[in-house]
Length: 99
View 1: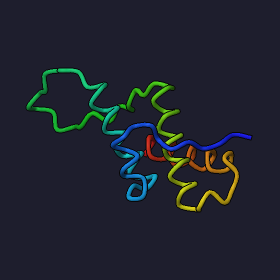
View 2 (view 1 turned 180 degrees about the horizontal axis):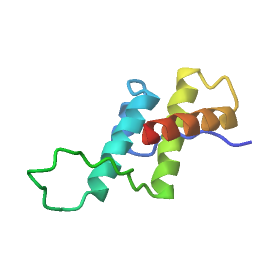
View 3 (view 1 turned 45 degrees about the horizontal axis):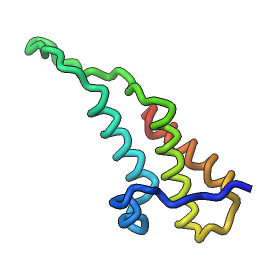
């Protein structure tokens, strides 16, 4: 039986009760965005925004899912199985990254 572990980052663990899974996804998305940005010259004539999908490593995605699963489990007082929280977190992270 798998167990859900609290996030290991000290700053994150202090915010456990305050963060929702959506906030975790947004934070991770911003982090991934900052990591994948390259310095490309911007054309002043183009008004289109770059809408290319973010390149997130499988390790980063797994970490995002693990944190979201933990916050879901905590929100529900760890009353369900770890697998159900993991699957729900996968759906939330996938939805937030493809939105």
